[in-house]
Amino acid sequence: MSSQPRSIVVGVDGMNGGDAALAWATELAVRRRAPLRLVRAVNLFVDDVRLGRFEDVRLRDQVHDAAARHLERALDAVRAAHPELDVTSLVVGDDPTALLLEESVDADVMVLGSRGAAGSGQIVAGSTAMQVSTHAHCTVVTVPPGYHSDESRQRVVVGVDGSAVSEGAIDYAFREASETHQSLVAVHAWVDSATRVTGLGLPLVHDPVAVTEQQEVLLAESLAGWSEKYPDVTVERRTVRDLPVRALTDFSRDARLLVVGCRGRAAVRSLLLGSVSHGVLHRATCPVAVVHPHD
Image (cartoon, rainbow, N blue to C red; front, side, top):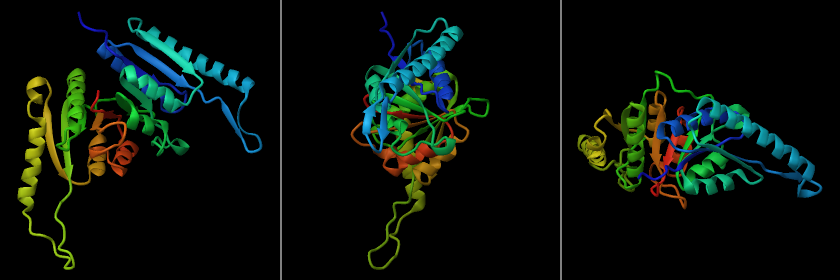
């Protein structure tokens, strides 16, 4: 007997981007026949320059009731459209990041909307989406506001760097491509490793053709065996001499999903190294899946 699939959790906040995230999560839950869980956290504290931080009981009740009504409407809409789907909801007075990280422990995938200042649609550094993508216990998909899949977005893109970290990303990308009947583009972005002789400013001797061939071998080795596991997925290998953020952003323009790997909750490495992680999540024009090695 097969075990019950883990749930798809979606953060619902009633703000710009939430509808796109809910639609993505619902489609994923239906496709994987997994339970769908809608969650919302409401910060119930008030900051006053004179009184400091305090909880306004009357405001707490009003905000909580409004959030609960919004979540109930979303729940009813999903159930009406997909009566076969197991859907639950939860609204709590808590910090959104804390709630989502707790929910990620038992989730298969967590789906969040992204939004930035003035409705830019970008993730603000330090935002809930950024924090959860970094520290969650499961794969996190961040969906830009207003995003919808169409015929121009018929491929999944995965970033590959040759490390063990990207193995999880490759696995998730192949599964997603297979389930959605789309092609897969595996992108390995690299920069010239040639350095200059100290004091002379002269480049070290290197063979650019040989370096390119080495990068192509690295990509091929990283993908070895996956096509046998997913024979229905058409794979395109792309080795790009460019910075990872720029290359992956370019490929995201006509992608349904961009998949990257993350080393874990303590720190982000590899394709998600410092500004690179922020750059991918800031600039990609399609949903971004951050896959953790413990998934």
